[in-house]
Amino acid sequence: MRKCISAFIASAMLFSLCIPTTAGADGTNNGYELIFTIDSGSVTITGVSGSGSTLEIPDTIAGLNVTSIADNFFTGSNELRTVILPDTLRSIGTRAFSACQKLNSVYIGSDTSYIGDYAFTACPSLSSISVSTANTVYRSENSSLYKGDALVLYAGSDDAVISSSTRVIGKRAFFGRTALTSVDIPDSVEVIGDYAFSGCLALNDITIPDSVTSIGNYCFFSCSGLESAKLSNSLKAIPESCFSGCSALRDINIPVSVSYIGANAFYSCESLKSIYIPPTVETIGTNALGRTYSLRSGSEDNISDFRILGSPGSTAEKYASALSMSFSEDETILTGDVNEDSIIDGRDATVTLTEYARISVGYSPTFSARQTKAADFNKDSVIDARDASAILVYYAETSVAK
Image (cartoon, rainbow, N blue to C red; front, side, top):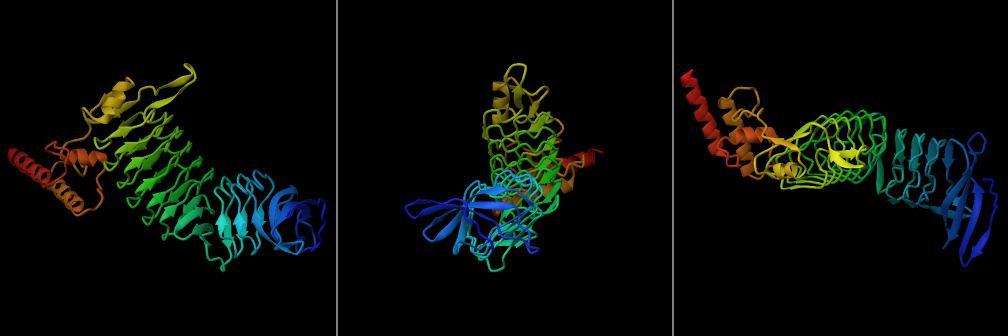
């Protein structure tokens, strides 16, 4: 390997040097020079100069192992397509390769045990991450990066495939995948991290399975093409700015399991003209619903014609009143029509009793907010056998009357 030291600065045991990267198999140089420091007998790559489509970092420099890449090492490249990292490398710094628009493939060696936050995020062309099979911390599955049962970073086609063994979708796992059109979240997933799908501009709809108990702040922030979202019936909270900037969002359910809607959760969702908030919601944060920034007034304002649907006396009604928003009961819900087939009959009583049995033994509710309101026949805010019985009695009486 040809090596050329272009700078040498000694300070105690710390050295700063610059060296061209390894030559390619055809004898050509990749066009980059690495800037690095030597400390305690190992090399940290701190910067780079030059240009090219492939960056291959060598195992050794000046006879010493390359063990680290510094934070923000290669952020924002418009040329880089391939990164090959050595087996000696132990850590990759925060945002080391973030926002590399054309980065397509990454190889991670056997000794890497730490990858900093957002090291490869906002790389919309990334389609393949390969990890040495000797690596005991990270692995590659479906071309994506995993750590244990957590998806650290998605790489693949615009129709995303997530491994069925995935329990956690990590922070910014899909961040900035601007061309992502669909993602199938398996029911093995329990947690979705902060900013996980933020900036996925082409994502049109999302279904979060009932296995998911938690979604992160800014989870779908600025997904401007998102029109429909089906939320898990196991969610306790819709956190801060979760759907903020989803300007095309028209259809979303708030499960009865939710008790908290964070500040700015649906801020600037200007296509969302109405939303039903179940009475289980106890807290609604600042500007969470029906609010946007008005250029005319230079401040936050209500979205035109926005309406909150809910129960009288609920937190939702108090929120609407405080902001002079339109509020009303959802008159489209027919009490007793739990399966929403426009008929109140024995089948509605059966599904109500089944839901009550599930909840009684500790399972999460499966009813949507609308179904829950329809099933609460006696209006005591509890779904139980008395509601099922009342629905059955109503059905019997109306059948005889006919």
